[in-house]
Length: 190
Image (spheres, rainbow, N blue to C red):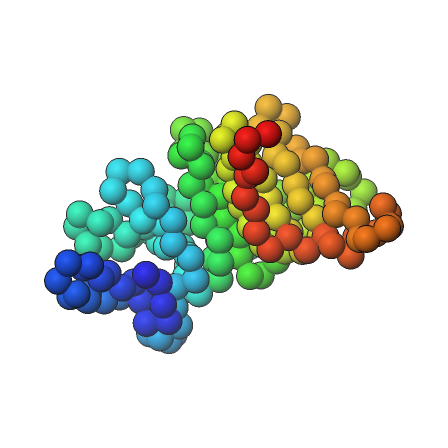
């Protein structure tokens, strides 16, 4: 469990609780803020991705320790260093990230070591519909869907572009009143 004081582990059998703290150079700024965890996502190799107010970390569940990802410098240069409220690892092991700073959507591909930032561009319909990301989801066909404050986006991995979907309000097909996406699930049996 992530919380304002760090990463919490609860043994469901014994009821024992363990708190793990992030210990980085940023702790001198504010120990409490450095350990404020906003998101968690299971990764491969017994790893847990941890999005925090002051950075992105990998928690090794075997060693019970935190480390920073190898692409942290790339994230810093792209302007996305803090407030990771969404961390998602897809079935191809790519790491998708969004932060509260409205910097857009980040994708790290571990096979190519490439970090890509997807940003909204009002003049390009093939970009994401907003830099304020609310949800990242992968469906059963391994398609990535991105919810934003301004619509739903389907990622085309072949062309590296997005298709935008806006939800119309009642009786108005041109309305974007229902464009704020809060969650995404896949409907079964279609």
